[in-house]
Amino acid sequence: MKYRYEHFGGIIASEDPPFLAFVDRDYMKELGCTPSHLWDKEDTGILSAPTEVHFAITNRCNNKCSHCYMDSGGEAENEIDLVHIKKALKALAEFGVFHVALGGGEALLREDLLDIARYAREVGLVPNLTISGSSLTEQLAVKLTLMGQINISIDAPFPHENGYRKNTLFHKADSAIDLLLKAGVPTGINCVVGKDNFTYIPELFAYAKKKGVNEIEFLRFKPAGRGKNLYHKSKTTYKQNMGLIPLLAGLSRKHDIITKIDCSFIPMLCVHRPSLDYLKATATYGCEAGNILLGAKSNGFINGCSFLPSSDISIFELKTRWHDDEYFNQFRRWHKNPPAPCNTCDYLCVCKGGCRAVALFHYGNMNMPDPDCPRVVNYHKKRGTR
Image 1 (cartoon, one colour):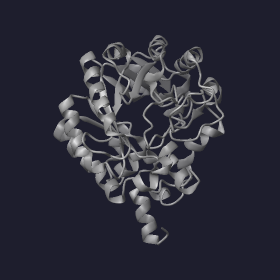
Image 2 (cartoon, one colour; image 1 turned 90 degrees about the horizontal axis):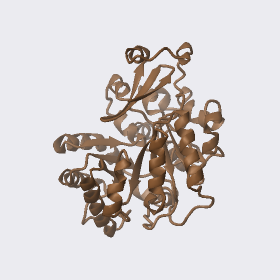
Image 3 (cartoon, one colour; image 1 turned 30 degrees about the horizontal axis):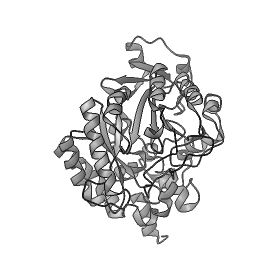
Image 4 (tube, one colour; image 1 turned 30 degrees about the vertical axis):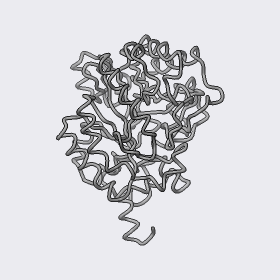
């Protein structure tokens, strides 16, 4: 088990079972940790480092999915080589990052993927991976046991055509799940949820149960990359947003499958008014771009999350610019002076205004509230301002 000091106490990380836990100072002392100098300072809510970095190690992809938030296809300009990726991973580990989520593009198209993952392990990072499965072989699946978790992208079970991925990709993804599970790799499913494939969610749970995967993570359709062209047509409806959490909760219990949602769906959770104490105890959070998580492009430049435009901050400058750079601070201070209706929301401290990428696309200003939050929709409907 690893740990890292924070103002409030610390973060402990385990791989078996896999978890990150935010604990107070007394708990850290019970673990035998000596008091930290951080405990002499006020807790500002800003972590000493992100816990996870989503690292797109290539922009290359052979699938051309219509909703790709990376606009993947060919190799991006100035993609960093193995030598510099290793330097980047070492810098992240020395900074205190716990997990690195390797992706793309299609990460399997990098011939040095295993070298990248091995080096991540060497420096103390847990490498996780998201792939389509289209390039996976039985031989490679066995070697991927060094990953902490691999998620396969499936937006609907066969025979449904969901408008984002071709049906031919489902069969490759289905085969990839079999290969990974046979090799003993912890395997889950990533599902991008939009208006058109929402109705297939129950079937996806039944499929996941039959296959024996350990989790499904549902990600909101976002207006990034090629997804911008489809967003207004494909985003989930108000009715779907209101029904999502009860639906997932019921199906999770029915099929006994761990279910996760990405941070952009937190407004759809908070509208049902769960206990704030429970949300805090389970480290449930909305937009934590520039704090708990970060994105990194294949050219080595940082973005607040994978769906936001890149900054001018190189991954090699992260440690020196983390604490006071304006790029990060714009995300961190948003909840301190939010616009209506977020300024009167009991869940502001958790949700933090919803998805900044959606707000940026909709308003041209990421400082606005998430326009698809049901509470925001109701607010504007009542005022006649939408």
